[in-house]
Image (tube, rainbow, N blue to C red; front, side, top):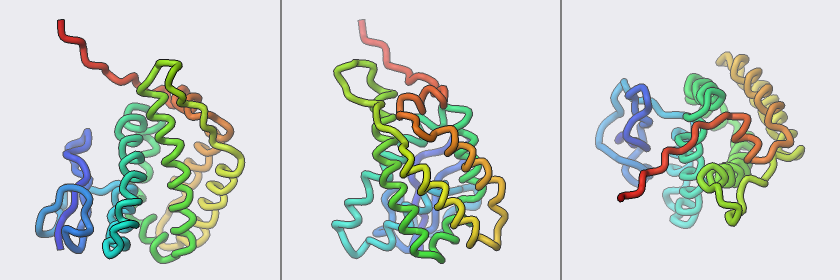
Amino acid sequence: MGCCCYSESNPDGTHNCSNVSGSDACQGLYTEGPCPAASQCFFMGQLGLYIAEQTSADIILSLATRPVFTVLFDFRDLILRRSALGREFLALYTAHGEQALEVLKRHPPLLRRALATLLRAAVLAQDALRAHSYSSKEVAAGALKIDATMTTELRALIRDFAAVASKHDFSQMVTRYGAIIDQLDGLTTREILQLLAVDPLQKPALAS
């Protein structure tokens, strides 16, 4: 048993860490012994650790999942944390992430649907990161769209999740996420960045 941490610290000083079975199940910084009480692990971190544990015996699957979570972590840190709406989104899944993951683990078909949605979300997140980082028209980015197929599946996923999650009150999260999906429906990633009103990245000054 050990503790796996994904990043140095959050803005509030806490760490994104979770208990894992051993160093092979950790894609971050691993230390022996249980995680301290002051640490926390966001839903994505918890899910990433769970997937790492499930695929640790298959190096191909393990390596294939890492880029997806890297993109999603970057999107969290560089986009969502720099936006008021993004911070609200993070606060909700931080509050309910542990319980939500337990629900998904008890319902494998629902978990597979959630993972399939995350794969599509990672493609959109990468496009949004490129659009946010590059202003040059020579770089093609920002044109990918959240289409009707994806929003329909997201709504169905939230509905089915709520139907099986009887031991924890997810009503606030379900209601707010449903409203956010309605806002994002049909938007390109560049339009999503405008909706989020993401703070611009600070570019380093050139040496004189």
